[in-house]
Length: 363
Image 1: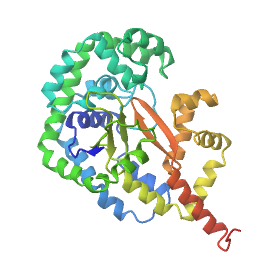
Image 2: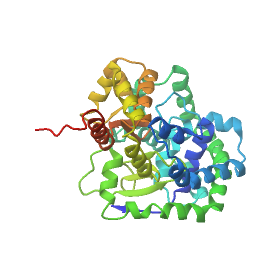
Image 3: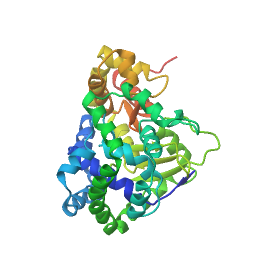
């Protein structure tokens, strides 16, 4: 396993476009810490400043065609909190290839223009976390036809996806028009990006790398596989996991993941945080979902089917649990997998015992 402290500018550009199209609240991370009972926000502001400045500079310098931005980078369906735009046309079509690309943008776009229909559909299926069902003999078009009705999308969104696949060349040209100004802005900031990426080297260097990977992926690691960890800068509290590709599995780690987890653990002893967690788990539905996650990670559609609830309802409950640190999530393809944050929950239980049973010593 190795940490490659080199930002992937094409992947970062795609994610930035998803963030910009989604118009996410820039104060989201600060609000999450406040919900968890964190009262001293100075360390957060200090840690987050480089990432905030990066976003602000990109917003100033990247002039974008707004109509194409909305059409290509806005989620087609409401999706649980993850990397913004994960269910947009552009990220579904291009993110798997971008995750493995090491060249410049024009080389990437030329490679995308040469893809066959089978290649395009294959990457689309990987985006939907269906890569494990693909073999050398798989008819990807037939597999897509089989899986399309199972996607948590409206009829209109399904039609939009199918139209995009049929008109792939036009979608690629529109995506390229959005990517070029953002990629150019990233290139101008490359020394700063590399400095931020190198800042994550200490905590992700050997021998801590495997522990970091296991803690942040929530998936079983394949014995003998060569994993690469790369930085994620634009959405620094998200993780993206790609199992397929010519260079083996790669995990893009948000460089504020560990910091936010440490802040959660420090805040878990506050009376306000303990009260909020007990209140949330007092809801029977959230309690049953939380118990279900003891066995293994589960994604939104699985939870929807298991509990007979609409995806939006699952999204509501999981956002509540995520915001207080009871669960964590990992983006794999366009699926968000949830798991219990065991370390944070253990700290929470310790603090509850201290609060309610200060003199208890056990047997």
